[in-house]
Image 1 (cartoon, rainbow, N blue to C red):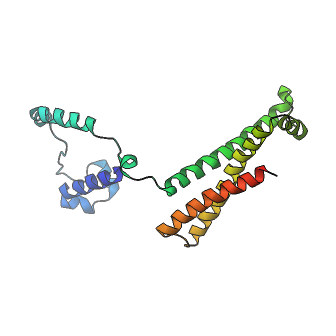
Image 2: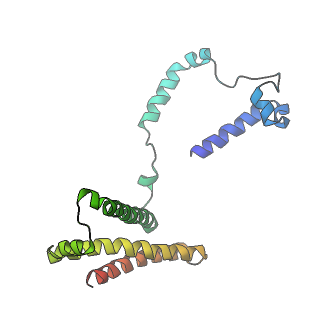
Image 3: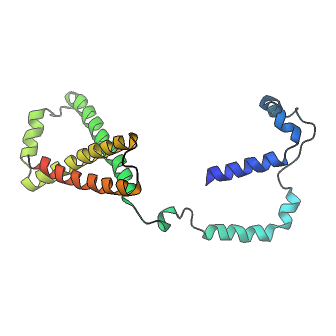
Length: 187
Protein backbone atom coordinates (compact mmCIF):
# COMPACT_ATOMS: atom_id res chain seq x y z
CA UNK A 1 0.00 0.00 0.00
CA UNK A 2 2.84 2.35 0.81
CA UNK A 3 4.56 1.57 -2.48
CA UNK A 4 1.33 2.29 -4.37
CA UNK A 5 1.01 5.62 -2.59
CA UNK A 6 4.60 6.56 -3.41
CA UNK A 7 4.12 5.61 -7.07
CA UNK A 8 0.92 7.68 -7.29
CA UNK A 9 2.59 10.71 -5.76
CA UNK A 10 5.54 10.39 -8.10
CA UNK A 11 3.27 10.18 -11.15
CA UNK A 12 1.28 13.20 -9.98
CA UNK A 13 4.45 15.22 -9.54
CA UNK A 14 5.67 14.22 -12.98
CA UNK A 15 2.34 15.25 -14.50
CA UNK A 16 2.50 18.66 -12.82
CA UNK A 17 6.12 19.33 -13.73
CA UNK A 18 7.26 21.67 -16.40
CA UNK A 19 7.77 19.53 -19.55
CA UNK A 20 11.38 20.69 -19.84
CA UNK A 21 12.14 19.22 -16.40
CA UNK A 22 11.82 15.69 -17.77
CA UNK A 23 14.89 16.13 -19.96
CA UNK A 24 17.18 17.79 -17.40
CA UNK A 25 19.87 15.74 -15.65
CA UNK A 26 19.07 14.74 -12.04
CA UNK A 27 22.13 16.63 -10.75
CA UNK A 28 20.81 19.82 -12.31
CA UNK A 29 17.42 19.26 -10.77
CA UNK A 30 19.03 18.78 -7.38
CA UNK A 31 20.76 22.15 -7.64
CA UNK A 32 17.37 23.84 -8.25
CA UNK A 33 18.97 26.11 -10.84
CA UNK A 34 17.91 24.00 -13.79
CA UNK A 35 14.49 25.52 -14.25
CA UNK A 36 13.52 29.11 -13.84
CA UNK A 37 9.81 28.34 -13.71
CA UNK A 38 9.21 26.56 -10.43
CA UNK A 39 5.86 25.67 -8.90
CA UNK A 40 4.92 25.22 -5.31
CA UNK A 41 3.00 21.94 -5.07
CA UNK A 42 2.20 22.19 -1.37
CA UNK A 43 -0.98 23.85 -0.21
CA UNK A 44 -0.72 27.30 1.31
CA UNK A 45 -1.68 27.98 4.90
CA UNK A 46 -4.71 30.09 3.95
CA UNK A 47 -6.34 27.27 2.01
CA UNK A 48 -5.65 24.86 4.89
CA UNK A 49 -7.36 27.20 7.34
CA UNK A 50 -10.43 27.45 5.11
CA UNK A 51 -10.84 23.64 5.06
CA UNK A 52 -10.06 23.13 8.75
CA UNK A 53 -13.50 21.68 9.72
CA UNK A 54 -13.31 19.21 6.84
CA UNK A 55 -9.85 18.03 7.79
CA UNK A 56 -10.91 17.49 11.41
CA UNK A 57 -13.77 15.25 10.26
CA UNK A 58 -11.40 13.31 8.00
CA UNK A 59 -8.88 12.91 10.82
CA UNK A 60 -11.57 11.49 13.13
CA UNK A 61 -12.72 9.09 10.42
CA UNK A 62 -9.16 7.90 9.85
CA UNK A 63 -8.74 7.15 13.55
CA UNK A 64 -11.83 4.91 13.46
CA UNK A 65 -10.58 2.86 10.50
CA UNK A 66 -8.66 -0.38 11.03
CA UNK A 67 -4.95 0.02 10.48
CA UNK A 68 -4.43 -3.12 8.44
CA UNK A 69 -7.36 -5.45 7.92
CA UNK A 70 -5.39 -8.09 6.03
CA UNK A 71 -5.40 -10.56 8.94
CA UNK A 72 -9.04 -10.12 9.82
CA UNK A 73 -10.58 -10.40 6.35
CA UNK A 74 -8.75 -13.45 5.01
CA UNK A 75 -9.16 -17.06 6.09
CA UNK A 76 -5.93 -18.41 7.63
CA UNK A 77 -4.15 -20.92 5.44
CA UNK A 78 -1.51 -23.59 6.00
CA UNK A 79 0.97 -21.57 3.95
CA UNK A 80 0.84 -18.73 6.50
CA UNK A 81 1.38 -21.02 9.41
CA UNK A 82 4.05 -22.98 7.58
CA UNK A 83 6.05 -19.87 6.78
CA UNK A 84 5.78 -18.48 10.31
CA UNK A 85 6.63 -21.80 11.96
CA UNK A 86 9.59 -22.33 9.63
CA UNK A 87 11.04 -18.97 10.64
CA UNK A 88 10.39 -19.57 14.33
CA UNK A 89 11.92 -23.06 14.33
CA UNK A 90 14.99 -21.83 12.46
CA UNK A 91 15.44 -18.95 14.90
CA UNK A 92 14.93 -21.16 17.95
CA UNK A 93 17.36 -23.81 16.77
CA UNK A 94 20.08 -21.36 15.76
CA UNK A 95 19.54 -19.29 18.92
CA UNK A 96 19.79 -22.38 21.11
CA UNK A 97 22.92 -23.47 19.26
CA UNK A 98 24.62 -20.10 19.72
CA UNK A 99 23.59 -19.77 23.38
CA UNK A 100 24.86 -23.24 24.20
CA UNK A 101 28.07 -22.59 22.28
CA UNK A 102 28.66 -19.35 24.17
CA UNK A 103 27.85 -21.04 27.49
CA UNK A 104 30.19 -23.93 26.64
CA UNK A 105 33.02 -21.49 25.91
CA UNK A 106 32.32 -19.51 29.09
CA UNK A 107 31.89 -22.62 31.27
CA UNK A 108 35.52 -22.88 32.43
CA UNK A 109 35.55 -19.23 33.49
CA UNK A 110 32.37 -19.54 35.59
CA UNK A 111 32.96 -23.09 36.78
CA UNK A 112 29.96 -24.59 34.98
CA UNK A 113 30.05 -28.25 34.05
CA UNK A 114 28.70 -28.52 30.52
CA UNK A 115 30.55 -31.65 29.50
CA UNK A 116 28.61 -34.31 27.60
CA UNK A 117 28.68 -36.75 30.52
CA UNK A 118 27.34 -34.14 32.94
CA UNK A 119 24.50 -33.10 30.61
CA UNK A 120 23.59 -36.73 29.88
CA UNK A 121 23.53 -37.56 33.59
CA UNK A 122 21.36 -34.53 34.36
CA UNK A 123 18.97 -35.43 31.54
CA UNK A 124 18.77 -39.04 32.74
CA UNK A 125 17.69 -37.85 36.18
CA UNK A 126 14.54 -36.20 34.76
CA UNK A 127 11.20 -38.03 34.84
CA UNK A 128 10.59 -40.18 31.74
CA UNK A 129 7.61 -38.13 30.52
CA UNK A 130 9.64 -34.92 30.74
CA UNK A 131 12.49 -36.55 28.81
CA UNK A 132 10.06 -37.69 26.12
CA UNK A 133 8.38 -34.28 25.81
CA UNK A 134 11.73 -32.50 25.61
CA UNK A 135 12.88 -34.85 22.86
CA UNK A 136 9.61 -34.36 20.97
CA UNK A 137 9.85 -30.56 21.17
CA UNK A 138 13.44 -30.41 19.96
CA UNK A 139 12.90 -33.22 17.45
CA UNK A 140 9.80 -31.57 15.98
CA UNK A 141 11.61 -28.28 15.45
CA UNK A 142 14.46 -30.02 13.67
CA UNK A 143 12.31 -32.32 11.53
CA UNK A 144 9.83 -29.58 10.59
CA UNK A 145 12.55 -27.16 9.56
CA UNK A 146 14.30 -29.90 7.59
CA UNK A 147 11.20 -31.20 5.78
CA UNK A 148 9.95 -27.70 5.06
CA UNK A 149 13.39 -26.87 3.65
CA UNK A 150 13.08 -29.85 1.30
CA UNK A 151 9.63 -28.57 0.34
CA UNK A 152 11.10 -25.18 -0.54
CA UNK A 153 13.85 -26.85 -2.56
CA UNK A 154 11.11 -28.63 -4.53
CA UNK A 155 9.54 -25.25 -5.23
CA UNK A 156 12.87 -24.02 -6.56
CA UNK A 157 12.60 -26.67 -9.26
CA UNK A 158 9.11 -25.32 -10.10
CA UNK A 159 7.35 -28.51 -9.01
CA UNK A 160 4.39 -28.54 -6.66
CA UNK A 161 3.55 -24.86 -6.94
CA UNK A 162 -0.18 -25.19 -7.62
CA UNK A 163 -2.51 -24.13 -4.82
CA UNK A 164 -3.66 -27.69 -4.24
CA UNK A 165 -0.12 -29.07 -4.12
CA UNK A 166 1.07 -26.30 -1.78
CA UNK A 167 -1.74 -27.07 0.68
CA UNK A 168 -1.17 -30.82 0.45
CA UNK A 169 2.57 -30.57 0.98
CA UNK A 170 2.04 -28.15 3.87
CA UNK A 171 -0.15 -30.61 5.73
CA UNK A 172 2.13 -33.49 4.73
CA UNK A 173 5.16 -31.71 6.22
CA UNK A 174 3.22 -31.04 9.45
CA UNK A 175 2.19 -34.69 9.77
CA UNK A 176 5.55 -36.13 8.76
CA UNK A 177 7.33 -33.84 11.21
CA UNK A 178 5.10 -34.93 14.07
CA UNK A 179 5.45 -38.64 13.32
CA UNK A 180 9.22 -38.41 12.86
CA UNK A 181 9.67 -36.31 16.02
CA UNK A 182 7.78 -38.92 18.06
CA UNK A 183 9.86 -41.68 16.43
CA UNK A 184 13.09 -39.83 17.26
CA UNK A 185 11.94 -39.27 20.85
CA UNK A 186 11.30 -42.99 21.27
CA UNK A 187 14.91 -43.87 20.29
